[in-house]
Image (cartoon, rainbow, N blue to C red; front, top):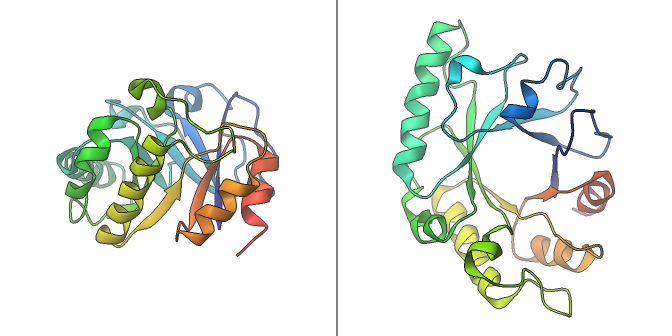
Amino acid sequence: MRAYLIADGIDEPDLSSADAWVVDVRLAMTEGALGQRRVALLLRIAGIDLDGLPEPRPDAILLPASHGREIAHLGARLAVHEAEHGLADGSIGIVALIDSAAGVLGAGSFAGASPRLRGIGWDAVLATELGAQPVTAEGDWSPVLAQARAMVRLAAAAAGVEAIEAAYPGENSGKVIAAARRDGFTAMFARDALQARLIGAGP
């Protein structure tokens, strides 16, 4: 399974076990924050002007989305951005992130929204909106998050793109990583380098 390591500061983390580095665009605009990256770069944006994208250009945009039309709109903006900056058409992809109840309910509209769509993932921060605990005492996703997770998996299958498991908020992530592999997730967000190594250790 591929590991998408989430940046939590301006210093470049240990990327040796990561397949992609996820950076908030506001952090990426910090001088020197991106360094000499050796893995795919995903920039997380929310209503950011694409003209402000830092160098190097990202491989994909991580877009918190609740409906396919948001993905389609970003795809059109990216086409213009690439043309204006001499980039190959379609060189910047889109990974949709479901982090809200609206996103869970709208996930079925993601299929066919844009040929740039490369993956659909989710974020356990969804638990905050729902007023739920993210995990059970046994270390599994709570029932309501498990239902949202299943919707993400189905939406990714319908769209024919990568399904990305949420980063596990606890310390003992092995059980959830194994479940992600079992359920057909091909990638998972990681909170740190250790989690990235555990994610990448299996098939």
